Figure (cartoon, rainbow, N blue to C red):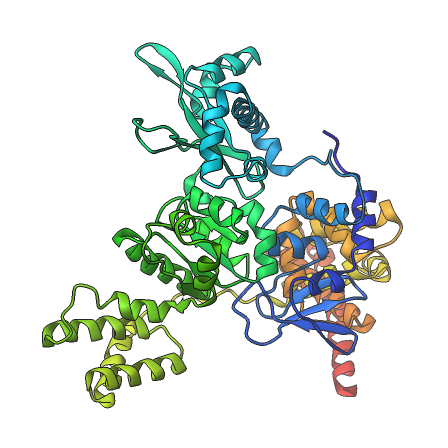
Length: 589
């Protein structure tokens, strides 16, 4: 599989105007020559992200996220950098099917095996042996179109998959480790037998596992999932995410259900912005995936006690991560799949039009199994509500306290006093030792990073560095300067946005992006570059003086001492000249 050339990457970048691309994701307002919008990469309430049409870059002045158009799409869409290039290139008509994907380089064989298994199961469903399963799917409202979109298949009653993959020269160990076969009583069998198969995909659309469902009475269990493997970690998966994410952006919200079948039913019914948790728990990896969607969440988990509790727990985790959460609780049926079959698409749409806030849901949930006419139960209920309120905004607190006061005839002052006590519990007693603050950068570090930033932006600053400085004592800054010079020598020009693409595979990529994100300076001034270089020179000469003084203390020979003394004087003279020059500049200002 060929690697895309740097020339093609640059052409795609140059034809993908960053302002127009970012406008597709969020509103931008022009102020002067730049555009500003709310940063999607942190909890931003006022526009702190600047987008430069001239330099084709974005930068948030609060969280420091910065980069070119590929970086924005990669971070916003939660896809890798190469897939961001693929996405934008495909829009422009580039044929990029042969671009090497980053993750497939690591798990190429595993993905090949799982994809072959998926194709094998799909083929089974479309044979004469799949007629009963096809009828079952039709009766459940799963059309052939949906079967193709979700790559639904069928495992047969014999271990045919093992035989098929064995002929492809894959080892038993590989197939066992991927959860496709296992050994039973000394005999190798397929794990999935006589079940309709539903592939499970990672966020990039690679098949990493399967769910098998019975379609005839008398077999158990109803569902069978792949075991966790090197490529399948249940906590890293949101079922249907790779299909749903485009619809999520369009609808500006994501619907979350429990089971795979619920998600498929929602998709068949026109609610394609749906993903499934594949259970009732939520991991930090899944929370990050939701955060990167940048839309509110509607929780619509199963209509049972476990689903009710999971709605509260999952909602709390999402809300704590800064995600807006609303809730739909279906009545009469166990889950969205059964609800749509029983009541139809219009009834589901009506439910989704009227979600309630997570707080409103919890106010009702916390009443369960309590007699609010009983003073003890009422006190416990109010305490639980106040405990939840301490993390809410002042308006929500005010509305809720007034509601509690009115509904249960409790003094508003008492409620406020009790809330203050709950908040003090969370703050806790003052700690004697403060956590260590982030180390402040030295003048040398600040100057070096500004020099490098200037060099990334204009060729004249590369020449100034080469002619007047030429060297950083620090290997990190020296390495970044070499990356910049290497790019310039190859291309005979420096284009900031293309340079960021160029260093995507560099071991110094993260450090380069950190510098880009930390520099607040918008207008580059040649005299400032001179000042930064002088600080580096002064620092270098001061280090040289220290080194010479150390040598002087250890030298016995008188003539050598005189030579070292003269060299120290020369270095100090250069330092004085730079300081005098800086002082004159400051006086003029």
